[in-house]
Length: 216
Image 1 (tube, one colour):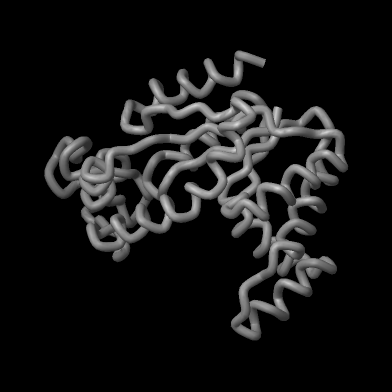
Image 2 (cartoon, rainbow, N blue to C red):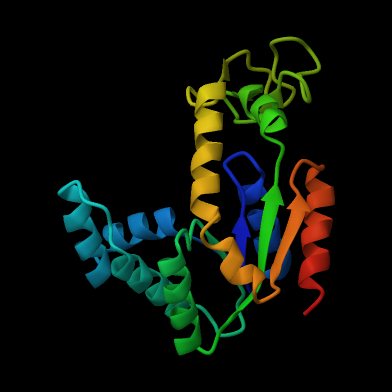
């Protein structure tokens, strides 16, 4: 089963993709991660991408498509894929259809994690982690049992990401809406788009996604 998982940064998309990988053996394909891996591996398309990035240019669709095609060729035909960060334009949506068709695949579902922007701001700006073991916490939803002491390792070294601020979150939301609006109608016409409340608990969101996948 091949799906697109949509959602702005902080919607829990990465968490849900990880759960799908663990439970169903699916593979998350993030274009950013694949580009970096292809460059590191020195593949033909990776070398093209590196030359463009070194020159400060955007990587064109055909290079990204080549990297996606190479990755799909490495997977078993029965191994499901979660597309993350691609497609972002109508042109890329057409390219993805072609890439999948060439390999006897098709998109089964497009799942969008819908979030409330103000609530997302609270969710993201309040999060922090233990600098020693990486345990995650939140100002509102998950404080350490003992103030300023990590529940897991006892460290008092806590960190916040510098980009976890309101201005950045709202900018990301604006960019996300601009990128998803062109492609959603393409898939809505096929009847394969499902919107899920991304503000629910991790388990609730996971169960909702699994219910969608169970329709096949």
